[in-house]
Image (cartoon, rainbow, N blue to C red; front, side, top):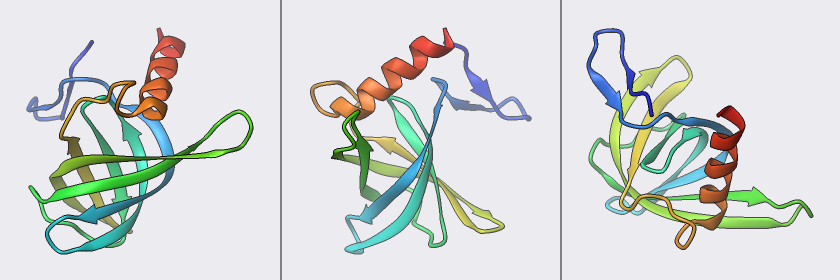
Length: 123
């Protein structure tokens, strides 16, 4: 897969992220609080979010979000990860999270299926 780089040629991601927009809760494992966020994009290694509240870089978190199936039923998934970076943004903060484990169908079936389907559509 092509590697995305920032404008100053520093490596940012090893795998392309797929646009995925929806509500999420990012819970700090240290401060015992949760931040309401919007997931913007994801891949098997991590995800990008925006939120009004900030988190701390390198903070361990649990991310909760849901998928609707073809019948409209809600399927929630929780992934453990670590905040990789936080940047100020005009409407709050941009937050990058790296998952503790790569997304796989046995641990995150809905996210894995979405990523597989999306990658097939772009190929």
